[in-house]
Image (tube, rainbow, N blue to C red; front, side):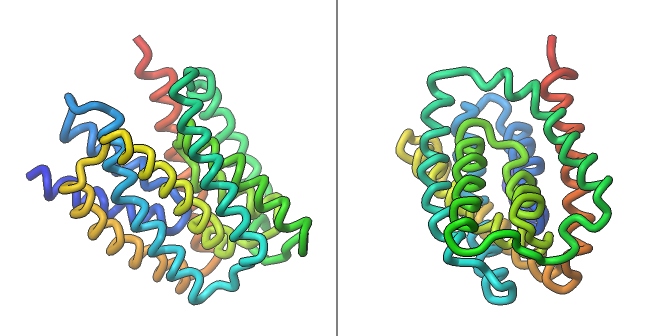
Length: 254
């Protein structure tokens, strides 16, 4: 039964994550529910060992159909990788409690801004070119990559929002760019967890197959229905993230 639960959760997580991020909302709780007494680091490492394949698959699918701005995104991916490693190290030194309590309000601001700006992300009008675009993309990759290593919830959604709001991408192009950077931050996390021995590979590999299948379906729908569809999913996922992070920060407190 545990295999069925985990592969089903991984399939759905890959589907959601490939469109706007947020797959961890599904797969991480499933892992904690199935293995309530397992070390949290092992469950998080196993989650990453599956999700990295889904994000990589989504990146490949998007790259074939969406015009990727590689000159800016490849340096940003390298910065993201390094900063995700750094964030993972920092979280071993300091507590993330303050960020955990602030996160619902940050996500709330993102949601309200997106709802208020009806045309946000509907048109692809990059604001920068050349070195300026590379620096902006590296700033996004470094900041959110560090956040992913340090804490993590909502990483994909933050990537998408910043590419839309700051760099002027439409939601489809932003999601494609986000997948590339999210893949590198996931690689950093998997490497760190594996080095520390916190990955159950027998579960991770099975979940990876399901995650890739979900990712293929999600990217197909995103590419078929375009930026309006991605915007709608983005709003839904951020709203769920707000509810989940609010409960984690306040509702579950003793």
